[in-house]
Length: 422
Image (cartoon, rainbow, N blue to C red; front, side, top):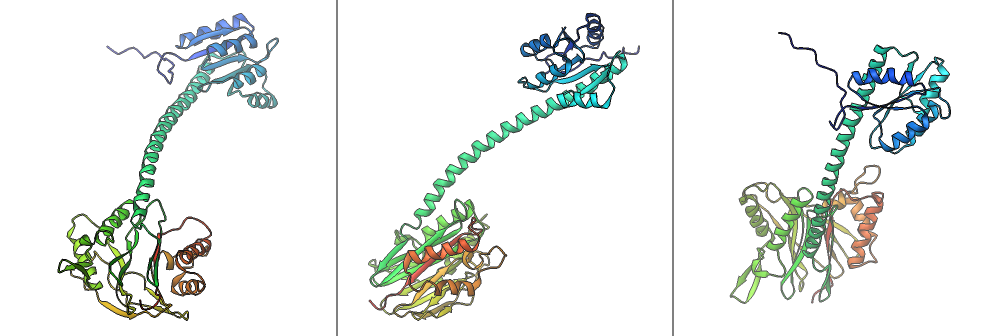
């Protein structure tokens, strides 16, 4: 036996029953004819004999669709439509005007008042059903969009909560990372060391530091871990423990002699130890570049290793700029990599400047990098400045050069200003 055809039943977005239709006409007969057809098609129908009465009903029970006559005594269909649109609603209401007017000006007037569709009187039943179906499709799409927007709003609220939690964690992480450089300015007799650390985000992959294992001996370093953000920041925390100035027993750049004092390892050996440690850790994909120097403050002699880091700068007291090193391999990429140490000599008034590529690779608004020549000009322009003031002014000029926007890379530096033999 063949199954009987399914009866058409209008749907609502909430699934709570049939769509509610309000029929508005001053003719009782016309209302009953329309209402009978609509109920037969499965709609829930309310009736009103005037625009004002319909408006009062809409305030109490908002309809999903409205069929309203245009010409009515008192408030006509246009005014009712206009005020209907002004009512507060949670969802859209579809409005159909019944009219005998066919002029284009009349249709335009109705659309301007907020009508969605028109039916010419006398109403043709098949056409009425087609118009109602069209309105139902519009309402269904509108309510599906509304439901999706609510879900999206909920998801955005959840994401905002997660972002706020992550932001709080990152703020705390930045405080922890800043604690890795507890002092920006230190003096050692006539010599002073200043440090700059400016992450491009909450946290970054640059690290600067120093340690003093004994009188007249210093170790200073500038490190740049690959990438940015949390992973790189975790690596800097680990590296800070390897080169700790507070816990010398844990510092891999030092060895204890006779249980009484520390001896500084050659810079090249320190680079090899770091390389072996990074490669021994499974799952660690980050690598780093480094410039590390040991300085004898009594004689001014220094030893240095450059492991893929930007060329350190030796600025003589007379302003001359010397770029040091041959480049070298980054740390954590190649097993058994060899790192060569080179020597130099500081005289009173000389400056040793170690820095990350956030300086030289900084781009202006035209996309031109600062480069080594630009860095040399920056350093020469700082002849009258010293210490943190000098580094802060260099960073400010870098920001101005980039247009004052957020920096694209971390910026860090160590400045050693040698005051002469102790």
